[in-house]
Length: 131
Image (cartoon, rainbow, N blue to C red; front, side, top):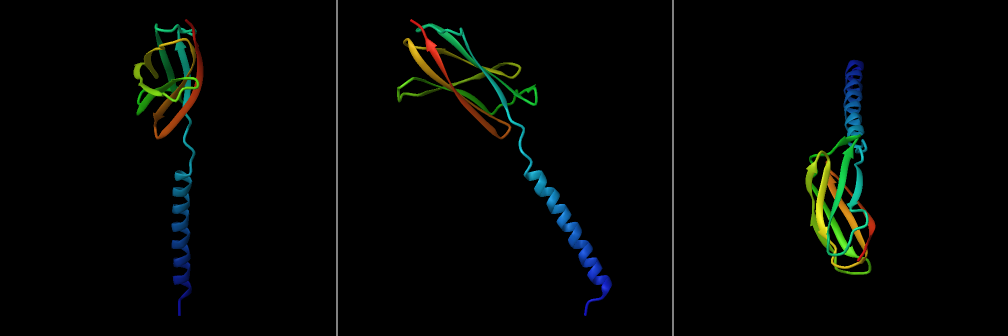
């Protein structure tokens, strides 16, 4: 019914088809390189009713990320349900900042939200605000 050469050709084509699809699969399964984010509040001991600077430095593979899709800070007083989002702007190479004035003394939570290169990273920090 089938000749030996037809079967050999079929097996050869099948081998090439599966080898191509397996390399595509390994490409799509490759893990993305994580973002490294450094968080800073300045001054380190903020005072109520005085402006503070919140910033993050975003890197990937040791290089600054200057093309983040979005960087914002979620800010709320600990124990409060009232959260607000503060948009950050790129100020220097890989650094995104926002200004914040804390209304009262106490412990505040700040969570950064960084979206860049199809990745999203968020970590919460606590900051003690003095009178």
